[in-house]
Image (tube, rainbow, N blue to C red; front, side, top):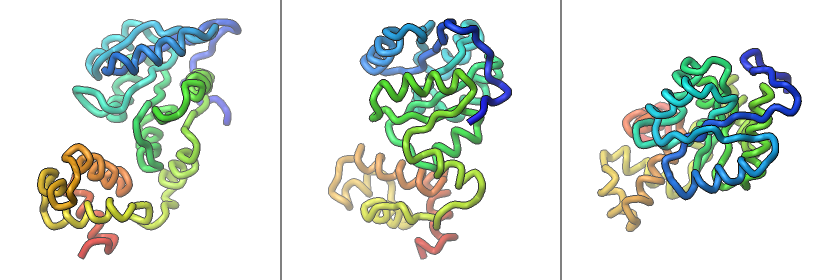
Length: 223
C-alpha cells in the first residue's frame, strides 16, 4: 500500500521515535523493552493518559504514537485527531485488547494508521510501527478488509457476528436492564457482563447502550 501524504520522510538508518501511551505499568514496560531492543526503534516517552499524550506529543514530536485504546481519561480512538493536530506528521497506531472491523473502521475514520491487538505477539507490533512510520497502514489479521468494507458501506448484516451470549445480553439491554441486573440474570460476574455489553456495542457500531438497542430494533434484531 503506498505511503500516505502525512508520512514524515526519514533518512536511511534513522531510528523511529515512539511515544508510548499506556497506563498499565507492566504492559508498558514489556512493550518498551521489546521496542527499545531493536536497532531502528526508540521509545522517547511514555504517557499515562490522553491529556499527558497530547502534551508529550506536542513536545517530543514522535514519528509514531503507540496508543492504548482504554485510558483513564478517555477513549484513545477519540483522541487521534487531537494527537495529530498537536504533532503534525505524527502517525498513530492503536493498541486494544479486543478489536472488530467496526473498531478498525473507527480508527481509520479518525485518522489512525492501524490497530494492533494486544494478544498479537510483540513482533507484530514492531512491524506495525515500521509500517505506519513509512506511511502505510497496519491492522491485525482479519481487521483491515472488514474495516474497508464498513468504510465503503459494504457491511454484512447488522448483528450477524453476535454470539448467543451477546444476543442474550442485547435482549436484556432492550428490556432496560443495567450491568448489575444482567450479571445476576445470566449468572456471571459484573466485569464479564460489562465485557459482553462492550462487545455488543462494538459489533453494532454503537457508542452507548441506548444506541445499541436502537440499532438492533431498526435491524429487526429486537422487537
